[in-house]
Length: 88
Image 1 (tube, one colour):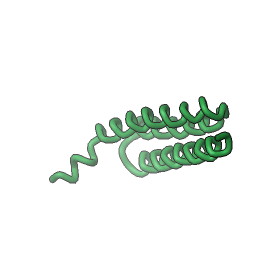
Image 2: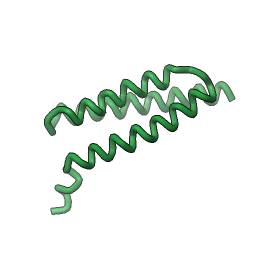
Image 3: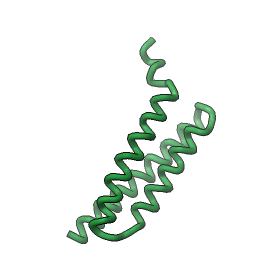
């Protein structure tokens, strides 16, 4: 069935690739604007968890690492937005 297509590991790899591209663009543009490295470091930590999720067997631990990573990257983006707003 079509539902199994979304469960294929390639989707995780594609998602990670897109996350890296968007995170790199968004966080680096914020850094150029406000000069604070914290969002880059936080975002890098989140991407680390997302990469780690690709290296473990498919299952609960993989899902947990993915959710942690995505949450950390989201926190980095929120911090980046806050800093961009404070620094015009």
